[in-house]
Image 1 (tube, rainbow, N blue to C red):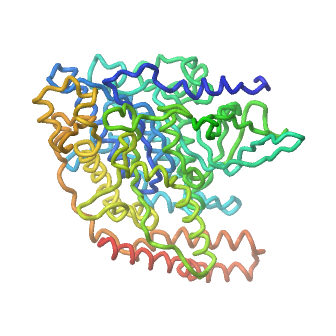
Image 2: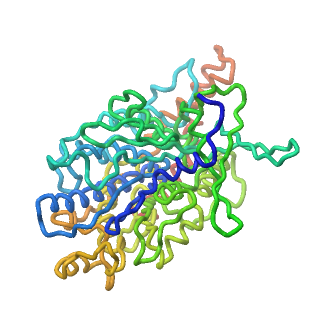
Amino acid sequence: MSEVPPSREEILRVLNSSVTVDQNDRTFEVGLVLGGTVSAGAYTAGFIDKFIEALDAWYGARERGEQVPDHDVRLRVAAGTSGGAGCAAILARALASSFPHATPTTDPADLARNPFYACWVQDLDIRGMTDLSDISEDGQLLSFLNGRALDVATRKAVAFQGAPLPHDSWHCRPYVDNPFAVICALGNLTGVPYGIDFGNDRKQVYKSHADFARFACDVSQNNDLTPEEVRADTFFVQQDGRGGAVNWMTLANYARASGAFPLAFPAIALRRPRNHYDYRVAVVPGESGQAEAWPLRPIWPESVDAETYSLLSVDGGTFNNEPIELARTHLSGPTGRNPRDRMEANRGVILVDPLASSSDLGDAAFSDLFSLAGSLIDGVIGQGRYATSDLMMMADESVFSRYLVRPQRGVYGGEKALATGGLGGFSGFFDEDYRHHDYMLGRANCRTFLLEEFALDENHLLFADWSDDQRQLYGKAAGEGYLPVIPLVGKAAEPDGNVPWPKGQLTAERARKLLEPRVVEIVEKIADDNFDTDLLTDPLIWKFKKPVARRILEPFEKAFAKYLDEWQL
């Protein structure tokens, strides 16, 4: 590898290479931004399931020659953090296949063949996370919960093989970029050192921990792309990982690392080409008011390999508040902008946010060390979840390049609409019915979003060829003067049907009992590792480990009981 870093011009060429040149007036480009989820990933998974179903139905009707709108939507990128990165990876893996969509009436055997439902509803359960197989006498205690449950779900998702695409003429889904871009936000505990040169031998060095990794995924059935078609700062993902490609397990590992919630799950060790970091920039205001991109130059210590960089990653939401920006700039370039006007917008990002933060305040006084640790983690992740300017633009009714999807169930909005929204999003791991409900809510909310909110001015060039009948049929719900970007066609337009609120499925005592055996083992492990064990101390540890574990779990049981009461579960 050359030691000479790429020039500013080369860096900008690479970063701008994802921008569509001479975009067609009748094409709208979409970037998905999938926020942090914990167990509420079930909601995001359901949203994506319905999103793909709607696009398949529309483009399938066109394939059959039906009289449906014929403008185009182009799904180009999915940027995710934490469980959102996991959903993005499953999306990329599933795009080359067809699969049964999961509805309340879908046969159970078909539910298991839906990669989103299988992972987020069936596989990610507290019983696997409290398994004791990762706690050994001579090993290290890696995390509060067993991360092997996530590893198993990851390997299963990677191994997914669906049916052929629904139409013989489809080499890949016609509304998707190939390669399809996935961007995983990472909480890089190792850090990337950068230096700013002030001249006269003065240099300010700092470390960045808000990291990310880019992937270009071959989502065709034939896997015939070549590495030459992929930009220099990006992993190229292909089924066999041949030539310059990596296989799907590499993407899965990075998505898994993005979801390594601090302390709850083990941090993940990763390796990547060092030159990926040669293509990072800082965007600053120029003298004329136009934004300018300036290279960030890593200052690698001699201990770092010349070609490969190793890092330890935790949950991407720990430091990175810019998954929105990562998707936006994939469409626009680092200093470009996506048109915002209702008549001009031709690219947009959709943020799916299942855990919209509540306004409840955190602790105002010190109670104990464990509560302080919990408040610290909650505060770091909450502070890093968004840039306020992003949310303000999404709330601006004049901006049509940014859209927000948050859970809505009757009068309840945000996390209170979800059965999985309690306890910082961990509650859903304790009951499959909670996750099933929220998956179906994600599908229902996606249908509403496509009907009513994902819309542009009826006189936009996108709709220039719509007939009067099409405008009447597909535009009713979007409101006067607007038409939907993605029309709902055939069965995809029909509601799935209601799923009852899963009240009475769980008690706080039962939730505590599910955790208790693991906490007992953790208490014993900590005692064994930190005290010289002998004939005297062994009986003491054995006698007190269960009472200590129950004392530790008392605040959890009280919090769970409060959650069940407030959520009417």
